[in-house]
Length: 358
Image 1 (cartoon, helix red, strand yellow):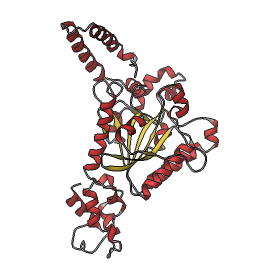
Image 2 (cartoon, helix red, strand yellow):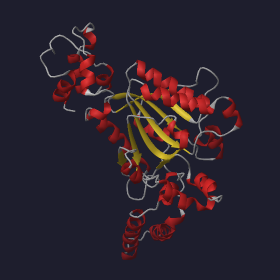
Image 3 (cartoon, helix red, strand yellow):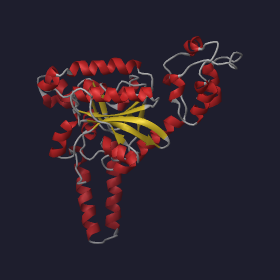
Image 4 (cartoon, helix red, strand yellow):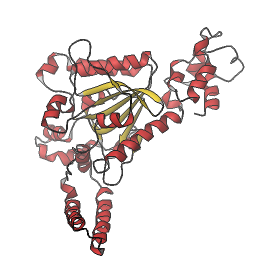
């Protein structure tokens, strides 16, 4: 991929040019080592104090990994599912089943293009009503088969066109929010780029939200905010600061649960490493059991749900415990049921916590 430098990276561009020239001369001189050291220090200086607007620019960098880059690197067995069974297949969103590590999951993510032809095909990552319906159809399948859902957010917003509005864009997003709020399987959302408005939230309502370090998530884009407030989109940098849209800001407001730190220089400079970091973060999260925030019910509610007799041997809590040990923690949330042999214990919830270690 051709290197693309943002405005605030100009000093790095100049240093890279000088370094490449010396390397072309097959030089291992002190000058080359000095330039490399100087570049490293300059990179640390730039990326240690990014403004909100610079973070927005990094999130939009054309060399960042996109949804399919993550999926293709994570899964050898990914099966993409198409269409909403009502109108069409929306190419702005990719949805399907795959295995991350040892965990079978459903993955849904917005996909941008890397050139004009791809962007037209992917609609610049802007989902249409049929895209939100497709995503919901696959989520419902995940619920039926007790599979956790991983959604990857990277969109400038939902498609704002007249045709999308005529086909019920607002209703499609609102319906997804309603369904996702009560869906009976875990949803893990990761913001990998832009997270703009309802276009992001339509597949972003979740149990836990993670954000890559140089991404953003907001009710509106900085340009849109500036155009409304000041009638001047050039004030986008000021709007970005006011919107509090960076991962750090959202952590402070309890919207983001975790920041996934990118290698120094950003995901666009460390493509494969970033993909690996996100994969390991997901696997570690799955392997570290569940804590209370993953459960939709309180311990008290769980105890109320335990019947005197346990009619389904296949869903016996002891089997559920084994599933949890094997990493299939989603079953713990799906099947809070009682059984013979647990009458003298504190509660199913506490026993699962003690035995599984979450």
